[in-house]
Length: 355
Ligand code: ZN
Image (tube, rainbow, N blue to C red):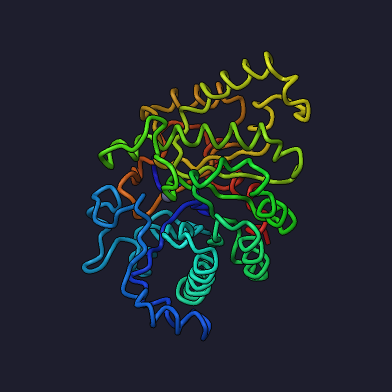
């Protein structure tokens, strides 16, 4: 594929903190003194789902001369924004702050990250937008942080991990969804885990290979939970964006969910329509990593099986290794579909991106 249409919206890029020390000025006095007293600024709180030195975490040609991939704004500008004539890119900071066991410390760290992101990235390039990092295991504190940060219109989404303490449809999470819906913020659910549970259904794996490959099954569980528990009945305007989930598992999941729902729907009478209908209306998926063969006919067939051309959103997943560069989408796609994936679908999903 040639360079995407001007005006493309990149729905998943990953700025990274060079270290915890850069956050120190962004804590309030109470937390700064605690962080320094405990020596917490010397830890890095890397999300273990994204080990910084794993080759998969940064393409070799996108690695900065020093530091981890995603820590250099100028490189992000030239490699991810200028290269694709991107109008807006949504920054998703993947950080262990969301998974810290202390709810108060997790909330303080998320606050600091959001303020650091606004000052050090969003303020320096007006193409950048961001997701709000929240203490996902403390929904009341997460809702407070969403409320605080949403006053800044450059924040366009709330960021959660796919795998946390409980399935994401459970009512304990609903304060997050209630606040997000009211403030026109989609829920971005990114691949990864806070490791409260094994990332596979079978128990703890030994290797990152097993861990990462298992994540797509986590997304199927996320969709089962959100739809079955009635999240989209309670929050009819809520949109959910699955990021780094892959795409080709979705038609199989749709078939299985629909078939089973037809057999047992008396169990869930609050569902007003089928799981497929909820998914098409409320769920969107970013396209990197794209897990289909690189032929336009195959992508068109997947879209046909999904039954909607409104669910896919362009993303580079910069600087992760998965990104296929100019081959992010196969050659030969019709212009109207390219325009939908690159521009129209993201604009419809993120109302805050429209003027
Ligand atoms: Zn990503």
